Length: 99
Image 1 (cartoon, helix red, strand yellow):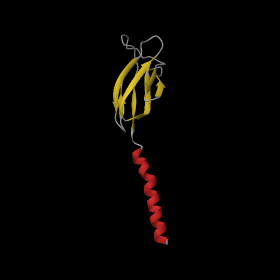
Image 2: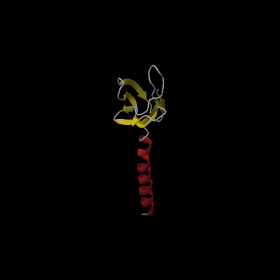
Image 3: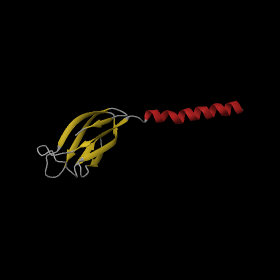
Image 4: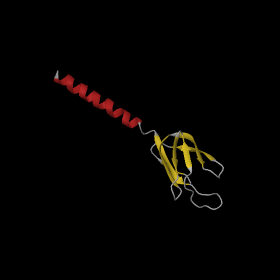
């Protein structure tokens, strides 16, 4: 009976650890938003990828963690500027720098 209890414990431990390796299916996109001609940082730009979004800070920097791996479409938009759309490839566990 004790051996069966140990085996059940080991099996449960293995099953609880298995999903942890499967969770590494996302990456991060970060960068800096700036004006096309002035190259000055733009604050308050909404950056959206795969249903996740963030707003650029005063220095134009943004950070989007948890983006699903694979081909994605990034969109940056703010009042007074035409929206910018770019296709990107996100690699699981890695950070993509995109200015």
